[in-house]
Length: 194
Image 1: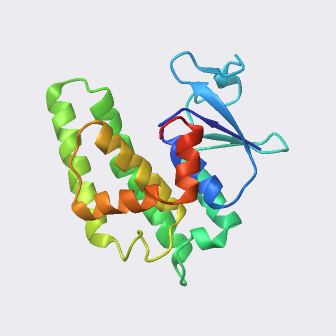
Image 2 (image 1 turned 135 degrees about the vertical axis):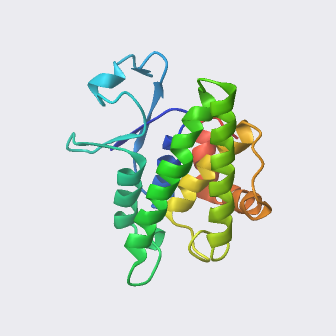
Image 3 (image 1 turned 180 degrees about the vertical axis):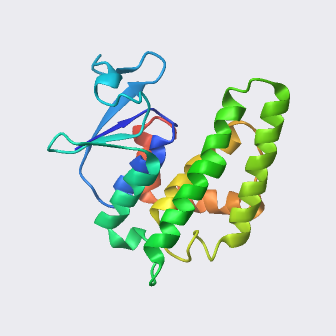
């Protein structure tokens, strides 16, 4: 199995989650500007969407998109899903929220068409972080155990730090807790982000 990633991109969430799940996989670095893998292969031959994350299964099947990949990882390692009758649904709900309400907004911060657009996106992200901070049920999103959604949220918090976006203290503390996890440390090391 292979994880196609770009250092510090949203694929970091999948990288962390795969380590949390004790999965065995190869990592293939992708240059998102040139659209080439580290071996020189055209990345769009692997994933026509042209962006990471992408997981190539041992049988050659390709899986893309954070929500799908993180859900798949959680199914393989049930401790990465919240407990309870609606645990899978709550996980999917949070993954979709992070993807659509936070991740997507960062595109308007990283590549704005205007200062006003960037300011509006920053405000929206701040509001969404405030909401997530108020919904946390413990050390992690769903309580005392980390889920795949925590890996995604951590990645978004790294992006917030990169662009100087202040986050609620509870989320800053959460990010520090995440940094102490061996899976996070390993993924950051692999991506050269220590």
